[in-house]
Length: 282
Length: 307
Image (cartoon, each protein chain N blue to C red):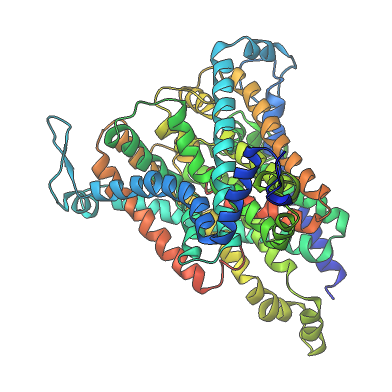
């Protein structure tokens, strides 16, 4: 239907836009191997020197450790709360059901700075809590719950509730029903949702700057050094690892969804998570 | 074992109790729904909605200039300060809005042909590859991607090197509004591609065939059939590009110039350095109201079905 020239120009445009998306990532990944401590282009020489420096840097280690702990705690909370809310919304009809979905999406649909400053004054001034790993986790959990929620709701809507009734008719108790019926249906959705929630938490800056106090997660470590212009060669190495580390969960999540034999829908679910995500967050 | 109370009740006492519990929950589904819904909603309402409400209320308070303590007397002083003519705040809000609008438009123009190619022209394999190529930059660190542009836009960075290679003079893009426009358009672009792609993919082939049978040429079909059907997807994408730009303060901080303050930067400074949360809260209601209006319009245009 579309003429040959239209098709070719659309293909060329697509290649250019993809290049636009990827060139900066490639450039910054290359800078990690820069032998000089000056950020100029082209890169004057290659070396693994800064990898060694970053490896032995206690600030870098602490930042990675904190981000890992926060990511795991956030993912755990998001999995539990997201699954509970999703089960209630997908399996029961009740007054205000639509409102639940709307409420959960709010932290992603509103600018992150609102969530950040609201939690900042609420936690530190109003409730009088001092900053700890858990204040960061609370901030991250607000927008990670919805990622799990979206994945689980989509999966539950496609599976039949009569499976659970059948299991109970056959004499299984709650735990057995969960272990042998509910879990096999939900597991991949939970794994994918959990991985995406972890990636989201690991990368979050804006809300974290308001809830972290003096603690440094990996993004905060990068931001602080970028603002002062210090330790840039080490930041390059950290940036390299952050790219690799956030990409792995996403690729895994895609894999997991594809292996359930619902490729197209799987992709759509990951997209749902993505679309719901980021407002953040970023 | 004594006389069985029936096969279902057989087994150790723990199992019997569990069975009774699941029976109870089965007979009273509302109890189950309540149990499932209460923990997530309670946490959410108390922490998130509570925090937002406290914030909104505090925008009507003031801070004592001498003691820096918050005074709980109702006043519109913060809002009056924002709208008073001698202050920079309206100008800052206008700059934020302009850049957010420019970024949204740029991303729509960049994304639409790519999304069209992915959804309607590319074969299964190419489409899968393109999908991942769009998805991965979206999930790789936002901060790292902004930093990549900071390095590329700098005076002896990659952009100027390439410009020189092409025989063009150096451009001092770093630390300008142009830099913010480029970087924002870059970081939020995948958020526009994915919903537009989803919208275009849903258009049945028969619609396009019908349009051609009725004598419409390519451009006419695009304008009268494809664009109206793709509009919800475009609006859905614009929610992300617009809202994310509106609430950002990292990009202006890292690649913007001295006059590139965003609403977010002012808010951040007033929470931190100036320790004046009431004013920050008042200023933050501007993006909140704008996003509220935007979401209402978007719902009218069917954007929520396209998500």
